[in-house]
Image (cartoon, rainbow, N blue to C red; front, side, top):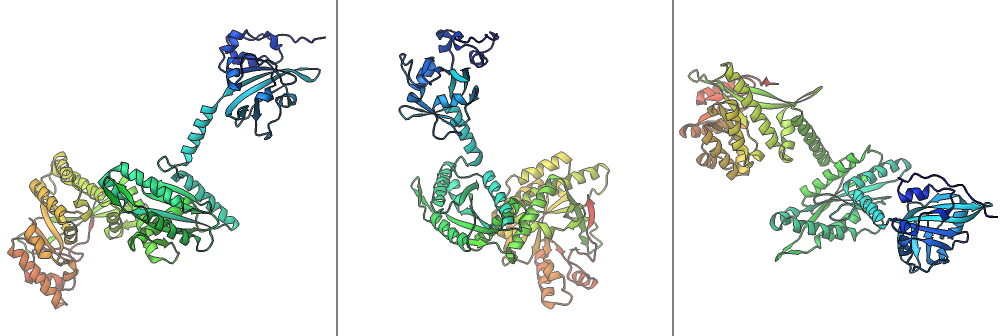
Length: 577
């Protein structure tokens, strides 16, 4: 006798698929009419206990590639469901035997009779009679597009869009895993690759050409990997290779192949041919590292050393490498300077430039920057300026100094204090090439209401020699504003006198190397005498630096030098905290 199940009341407002899935123990004969099921976007299939199709809606027929006369066809004859649990694709009836209802895993795939694959998800509800499946309701959804989209998103999360190599975030994660594996004795190596002269392609042929070269470079690098090494693009023209379980000499041998592979690229673009080389820094990953940042930083420094020593070569980071330690110290300064700029940690000191004759009593000061870092001693310019110049931070430091000085002088002017003195500000050679510097200075004068004649900009002879044109443009620009100019460290260069003919300056600062011991060194005394005489003949005011004793002051007075500066006459004093 046929057993009847009581019908559940399903709210009519629910979507059709939801209503189907809520019919847990209902008689499938009571399902909505064909017209309603054909409007459902999911495939709806009813199977008997043997797995034969009794009903399928329009979407199901399209999914299974069936015609309208397929009733009675075995489901397993037209399609198979592959799941993680059952790699051999069990018969649909076997699946239904296991439980009253089940959901396909996220990785389920429907294999159709013609061999085509469809990613699906879905549910099955089994109606049982005497403990055996009587009928089954199978609801399937084609999720091929969604699954492709998910795979693409997962790929994008770990790969670089331009080259399809691993991206920086993924290689950082793998480096961290390699560090953790060192606890079990594993040793890995990281190769940090930087392309030499790549900027020429970008600057002369545009970024589209540069992108194409980066794709070729990535392909050339990948072709050299034979042991499953991980290759990533870190950004720009920088790449990295992580070697797991690196054997002695393996990293060096691979680096030579990678350098050769980049050198062999003959890049033709718009009737031009370009060749680029590669410099590589090598770091062996062992237990001395706490995190991936240390590994990448050291590898970057080693790569820099390879560039410093001729490019197109590799450099292995070793613990006893003094050059590498110096580079690391500079990189540490870069981070500290950047933080100081962001958190306003610089302080300004000033040192008097004292007149040697009573007839000139106008105050004259040179501004000196210091860096404050909590409990650390104040860092003097000679500690951090070399790193700031090397890594392009001096323009930001110089702008901070200019703004602070002019702002402070503007506040002093309001109180009618210190209105007649001259304040000298040093300008780095790397800052001179900043085309927006003179407009910036002009805007500060207008904003704070400062007389430009109160400001003197000091340029070293070395900076002038490095970029003569930039120095000349700057001098002409600030002279037009009304500022004064001082040529610092005069006499240290081999063509000093040519600058005096080209530059419109006010002060000539005699290099301290000649001044410091001129009382006991006749040669240095003659240099100071000659430079002072030359400056006076050109109508310039002369200043002697590094004055450290009374005998030196006496010598300068005898020669007629106008000003002197040094610790003997007054040490730098804090001016702006």
